[in-house]
Length: 80
Picture 1: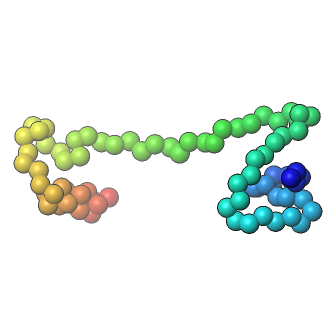
Picture 2 (picture 1 turned 90 degrees about the vertical axis):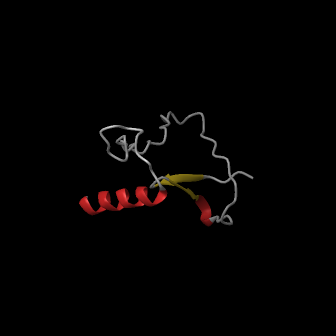
Picture 3 (picture 1 turned 180 degrees about the vertical axis):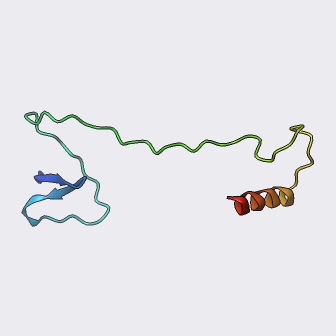
């Protein structure tokens, strides 16, 4: 089945009032006469992580428990 359509606000809009059930898999075929430059999806900016997560003058020397990690994260949230 071939159904014509166009792109509106990044969404394929089918012509002739045709509707397809939600979740229908489709294939989009561009006509050869359409010199369109395809663009890749943009990546989300990555967040920088600061190490060590738990500040210490001597990394690796702290006795870290789940409770201590929760305390540190709560302190960091409170200061933000």
